[in-house]
Amino acid sequence: MPTLPDPDLEPQLYTGVNGRRLIAWLIDLAIILVLSALAVVMTLFIGAFFWPVLWMIVSFCYRSLTIAGGSATWGMRFTGIELRNADDGPLSPGQAVAHTLGYMISIALPVLQVISVVLMLGSARKQGLTDRILGTTALNRRRDPGL
Image (tube, rainbow, N blue to C red; front, side, top):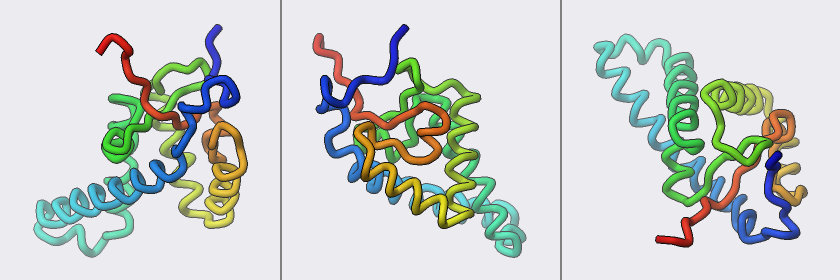
């Protein structure tokens, strides 16, 4: 049964992941801002009265759908990282939703986000709190040697 790659045997899969994750997060933040602004316009600006709720819904849908569709958000794809499950496979739609829910809870409770960042910086597999709970991790995207 496959498991997550060992960081001692395949360190290239984990090198620079934290920095790339931060850049991916900033890219995703910008995308979510644009999508949320478009939603406000599409609702004839009524969405502006519910901006925090609208933002959360757009963020949840964006993250869940993009992770389910390729095991990475668009920001992650741009920076060359992907999420992998405990079996070293792409996240299923259910795992994508669970990962997004864990992320949203961490963002809502800053102490959990701090714990998550400390875990990412201090663990060999660069796993945040949600990653530890779900058995997932972010890796540098593997390249097909035949290409």
